[in-house]
Length: 426
Figure 1 (cartoon, rainbow, N blue to C red):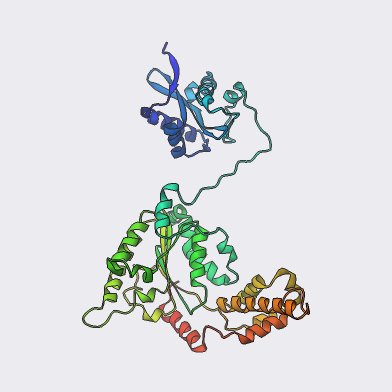
Figure 2 (tube, rainbow, N blue to C red):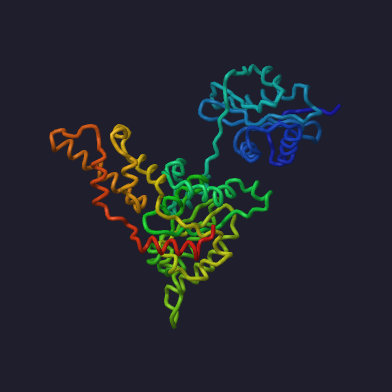
């Protein structure tokens, strides 16, 4: 009879661990830890295997965290179950971990797993009324250095929800951009190619930058803003610095790359001889196709003056969508005013009146007017003998609305409507 033994994991055992993993999946058991995590713990933490002859028939993998140990993986081949191998593996891995001075050894098993005898035989107690929560960290440790060098960051997860109003724009961005990128496998089933680049255009202050950040937040991808003005001082010139920046971005697994006021580096090319800025535009036109070949990233360019962009810049094949971001409608303005009015003052403010008075205001205009009203109310309360305790009232807001000059003129608003007809692709 072939002797069975328990020994430490060896690098050549990886194929056997993979076979155990696949046998679990084949029997409808979804392991709690990913295969990559199990293999990493085999190499760096504690792992023992059961072998019969030359065949690996079982394995137990564990890791220690402070004074607690965790069983990362426990499995035996189906033909060898019920023979006490699991119990022996748990005993062996616990013995290897004893030097850590652990006061607790825990395990998380899928609820479809029925082989609990190995744990109960080793004195494990099943805890009732517990739930397992898991969250994927969007940026891996190896990427943090590259992200920091690029000046990128991971934005708060709630930015998308904090975009007040603008329901139509949010729905469009959700459907066209977020959905196929967040559900890439499902998109592939339907023959949908996830977008790689998009232009947001519209008058100043309408929230294009906010939307770019919100998209990154919604996807939980790092947000990297490229500032051409900062790159211009590079010894290799703006074109070279731009090229190197995108090469560095390629090192990230995922990224939303944002270029604001892109017309500064992608304006209409004309004149002889070519100007240095035309060389930058040419470089950007070369960068975009290469960028599009890399999955898991999205380029968002924003412009206030889409008419000034080079015609080659906007053509099909470079940008999937050219999306207008305009002034908020009445419902959007109501949502914005509601967001900025203090909760304690909400009952004493005529929101409908503010919505009507702020027609033609951009989101930036509304925020400015709202904060100015709060400041005025505070000053009245402090310097006018507490004449207005309890926060701003309707009159405060109407005063600041009257004093606020709208960012977008009627002429600019009309040009925007014409640009939608001529250039938008949604």
